[in-house]
Image (cartoon, rainbow, N blue to C red; front, top):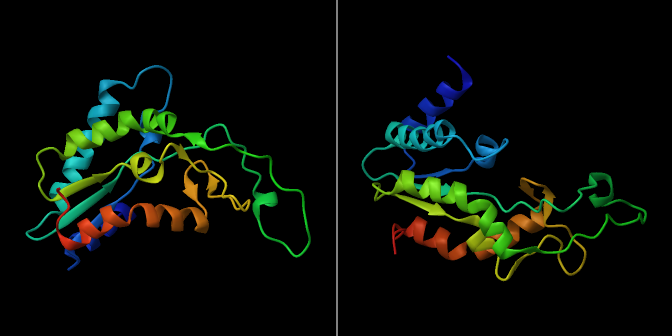
Length: 179
């Protein structure tokens, strides 16, 4: 049995009532031009099939939508790491405009929302709406980076996202996901 099938069987058999689904969704839509209807339907139908497979009475799902991706930043991992001696900081990276982040994630977020429309036990967390206010911070005021790369937060970034998503997560945990 392949790893994917083994893990899905494990999750399905789990007594957990709360399941969080996250994915680098944009990887499925990237390419030249507009995404094909085939790609769109594969994501939509695949998510629906996954939720049907894992569903059971009392189980709820939180789907993490499109990621905030600071595409204009250059990530120099060697300079971002702490060290015993001073080293030159990475090149500065300005905050990402919230409108840009939301536009970048809107296609995938709208697609995921359409896949969840008929489900009362699933909620979409739109990351760009939660993480960003007027801007999406990339570097903290003290110089600490909030992103490790285009798809991953640093510990500081994860803590900030957790703080900003606290209300959504609390609603999900309490069973009141649908406002």
